Length: 235
Image: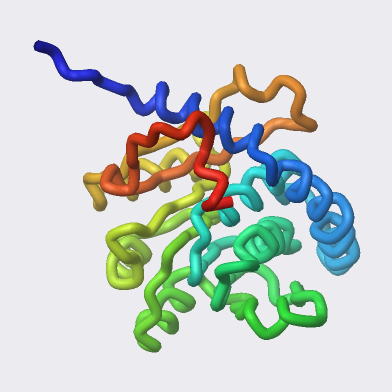
C-alpha cells in the first residue's frame, strides 16, 4: 500500500492560496495602504532612491505571514526604507515582544512614534553578523527571520545559535540569480529539515503586483488538519 506523497510545490500552492484568501487579507491591505506605505514614503525622501524596496504585494504577504505564525521575536536583515519592517511589526503586533532589524548601507530609518518605537530595535549601518552577534550575546531566541540581504557562513553559524526548533524564514528576492536564491541554498544546506514554499506565478492574478518571497519552515511545523481553511484561530 503506497503512502500519500506531497511535493513542496503542492504544499506551496495550497499555502499561498489560503494565505491570500484569509479573512485577515482586507486588514493587511488596509494597513499597508494607510500606515506602512505612507510612512515608508516619508522616510524614503532621505534616501537616494526607493528602488529595491518591496512591492505592495510583498508587504501584504509579509503582514499575513507575521500574523499567521504569531512570532514573539523577529530578526530582519535589510531594513532600507522600512516597508518590510513595518509589515512584520503590524502583522505580528498581537504577539510581538521585539523586532530587531539592520541595514548595512544606511542609518536613516526611524520607527514611527508609539508602541513601534519601543518594540523595534534598529541597527543602522550595521552588518547582519554584528546584529546577530549582539542578539546572541543577550541570549535572544528568534522565532521568525526575514532575510533581504546576502548571508554568509558566519551568519549561518549565528542563526543556528539564535533559532529555535520552530523558527521560520521569509526570504526576499527568490528569483533568477538574485541573492534570495543563494540564501535559500545556504539555509537548506545548513538546516536539512527545512521545507521550501516558493512563490507561484499562477497565483498572482488579481493581486496588485508581483512578489518574490519564499518561505522556509521545519517539516515538524506542518500539521494535517480537518479544517477546510487555514485555522482561523491562528489569524
